[in-house]
Amino acid sequence: MGTFLFDKIIFGPVASRRLGNSLGINLLPVNKKICNFDCIYCECGLTDGTKDKLPSRANVRFELEKTLAEFSSNNKPIDTITFAGNGEPTLHKDFNGIIDDTFELRNTYFPQAKIALLSNSTTLGSTKIQKAFEKIDQNILKLDSVNPATVELINCPIGKFNLAKTIEILKKLPSPIIQTMFIRGSFRGKEVDNTIEQELVPWLNTLKEINPAMVMIYTIARDTPFETLEKVPEEVLKEIAQRVENLGIETQISA
Image (cartoon, rainbow, N blue to C red; front, side, top):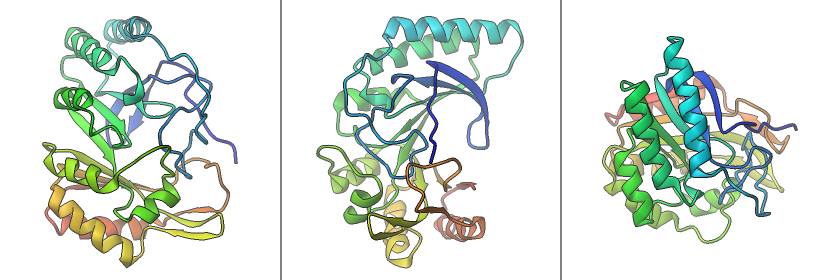
């Protein structure tokens, strides 16, 4: 299947059910995906292991200020400034500095806008990254499964990834937002389905322990690298969402 890459540093804004009018920031190359997960469902395709130059902090600031100034002068609304793009944003060596720049520019042009991060949770153990997380308004963190074998199957970590340690850090974070992708199908001869009870019950128990500000659940919306994957029906997502809400946790569905 064909996949999708963001071809600019600043993209959008995108009308999002989750984030409103969301202006995106891509800290990765515009021609490839760079990530420490190689999720089999990723709309950006498979991870490219070759080294490539990332946009500089100065260039990100220049492009962001140019866009924010233009939108402000034209009275175009921005609800959220979101770090997303072609891979894992926190892999950028100047991530913390870019966060500081973004807050400064946000305060100048759109002081009411929130700053959000879409992250795969792999860098939570970094003290440096944790300092950035403390500043960001909405940390939206991936937790597709609490089963190590399932994480290996659908997220395909590149390098070392300690799921148990990541979950323990998530429990200590103030008001994280958990994002979970539900998929079905097959991959390399193995069944893929994180909607079954053996997956859902421990996931729900872990959510109760994390006590996130919100849980965002979604399924495939664009093409994926593998044609053997299937979109989960909306009615199934609604049933899962109800079980999360029964825990007293706000839930949002993107079908």
